View 1 (cartoon, one colour):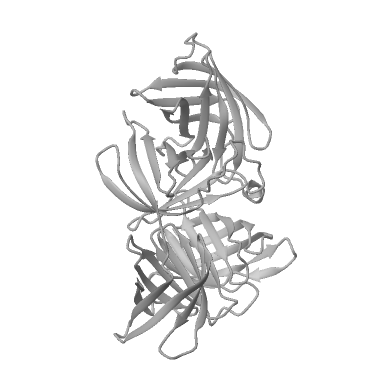
View 2 (spheres, helix red, strand yellow; view 1 turned 180 degrees about the vertical axis):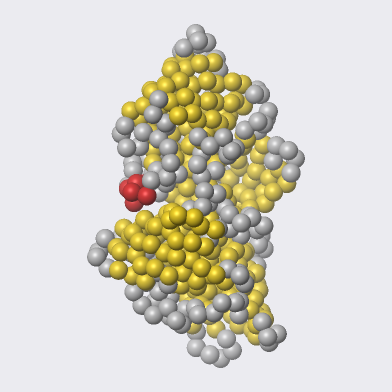
Length: 434
């Protein structure tokens, strides 16, 4: 198994052919997730699913967490998705042959896809468990070999331990589902991986079955699609206590990206852009140059970003990896990925602030078109995500940002600020117009 995030591979990730069954169902979207884990603890989160030309990427956002949870998946069928989490966990699909041979693709977030075949060496036949001889191919085409030991921990759950000549030891969890062994494994013994099977229904609802390391039985959760209303009434309160009313009308877009008009009293409509990441809402205004830049903080300190502009329907994505030591969102990061224009982009950005929940960024990125753009912007922390605005190649000073969350009733609760500010300007509640 090929390990570790590689900055140079990120741009290529989105052009890797998907080594899984062709599908008609789209998994891409934003969801509310609720469930009860293997210890009986109830949980809720937002869920963003992004389809790339490589693995399917999943991001869970939790209101009280400082970072997000990342998953990587491959479709088993038109309605089934095999997934592993967290960010350093590799997802392995094993098809079980009659002679007990295990074979199938694997995926690592931000790296790509590999293939592996594990042949029984204990004479155990079709029974899953025991020792296996491993032969595989990493995303860069390099072959690898080693051994795999599988130990049953329950009726359908397993511990897996790889010992690979070039990559060291990988440990993780496995779960049998519909005759397929799904595994999540990592080289880091401090990280507990999970493996799951997601099934999507005709109404878009996703039911999931999960197995975590050390658990004797799987548990379940349900994710329902988030629907954005066509219009909202807004009740705002500034930090000085003054109150105001407005309305917001969605004028275009779908999925994760929407255009809107913001209207206060009899004033002219102000155009803006809205991006959903799970239940996290990112709105920007101030001119057509004002763009969304949305950074999700990963457990390993990297930032998984989404960017969008009013002029381009495409939502870009980059991985920003720490340069030297960083502290949460603050520090210096190298970035690589794609802009909303579709151009590949690389650069460096420094994020500062955060004392009042407001952050600033500075830096530059160079695109494959030869254009160099500014990454100066303003941001608000929201549930493990840095929600913000910047103006690539233009004036950022008029740009403002609204950061909030949308609940099951479609109500958005948010805070807002503007470029140049070091504190919040106020809060607002957006209620769907019935």
